[in-house]
Length: 286
Image (tube, rainbow, N blue to C red; front, side, top):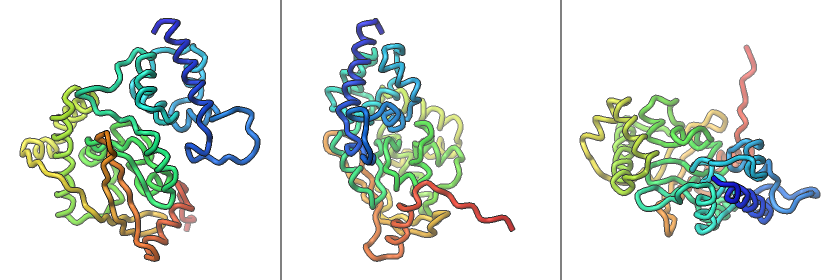
């Protein structure tokens, strides 16, 4: 990046931060604020980057941010598609285009997620990567609660021996879910052959997981995730939740919503989980 582009990037980041209000991103607005828009530390937290790195970017003292950092900043700052592309170009990166999965979430969808606080909501790509989740979804599902991109990708967690999901499955359900996960990746790779994250993910899965490679070689292409899922949560117990998988217009992203029938035991458990959040309670020693 040359000096002009670095300075322009810094100015854009500051300007975009100042126009986003705490309410826009679901943050409390109590008390007097000395800055218009979001504080720098709030953007850093929303984007999952360090405060120091964001400060250097905004002051023109850092260059060449990665594509994943740019995608996170674009989501945190509620950028439009045009603004997102401008951000990438200023940083010397090609905007997501043909052959690459676009992980940019429209600002309207982020606003919707902010308002759906009583249900668990996450956004996934066609490859099963969780790119955003509200607080309730992160409390419900370990897969949604941070980590690297691979650690937020369902197939990677399933076939690379991560701790078992909180979703309860019979053996038949488990086998069926694995077939669908592999089929999703095969379909995604056919549509996005230039996506380096996806190609490397599939290559490593085939090399490191014989079971994944076996399913991949069978080419059992199909779709259809379970419409109802049963969870066992360490703090609130069992929940039976409806799972609605909604397509976001104009993109290949999916809005996945977990909800419970009003007045049910699961609805009360979900409400309790919303109050607990990410807290964990250890049993007292015997």
